[in-house]
Image (cartoon, rainbow, N blue to C red; front, side, top):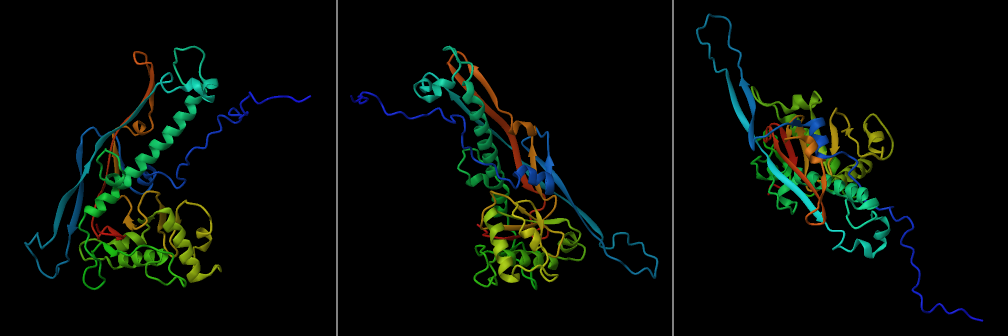
Length: 352
């Protein structure tokens, strides 16, 4: 006797691990906001659309003290300028219609609340909220670095956009030490021997050398800031890996006094480590373009916002008159550089 099951549909278990969703990871090296808190400047509780930060530069000279003098100027001057921070309002929102989107037609039906007057999405809602929050955090990170290239309709100048718009000048050790652009070629792992100028380790060394040359009498002294541990380098994850490869090609795997820092480079972590030989943190930021590596004074990158909690606050409610569940983010923020010039920042990357 044979059994006939031909009238049945082949079984597919859609309930096993039904809430084991694979969500996008958040970047482990820290958000753009955490970078600004650690090595930049954060300005909270800003309601205005634009505000300015003051810059003070003084020039002093030593005159002979052999005689009495009524010249109380003597060429000693202080100049106050300002940098501008512009904030923009942003919004992210959506509505979900459990009836019109057929949540009851698939395996999702078994997780929905009882009844037809849906106040929530049942067991699915916390997973959806978690995924949306991750996506919002990523969009904010992207915009804080390269807002005008993010594809969003929110027109926003990120830190990278502001770099491209600035006139930094080309650095030259003999003729223009205050130039900001040290090189423009695409960063690499340094070639087969690690000696190519575009190798990321070699680029970092070039940025350090350029900073050491940036000493002007009565003006900027980026070298002093670097030696005092008041500077850092920023690059993206791929360049971080190129730095490791470039370093190993140059120095091998043996830890020596001539090549310090290898242990930190082999730590397999995206946390900051110091560039060998200096108290100079190398920071990894996910959304700075791979074409660009920056050495900057601490406190230069500015992040301003109204309430910081607005960036993580997700309002969710039932719009009973439309039978929809709605959610919304609203925030206001802006970024800037306090001193966008080659006396306070050196860059390797394109100029347009």
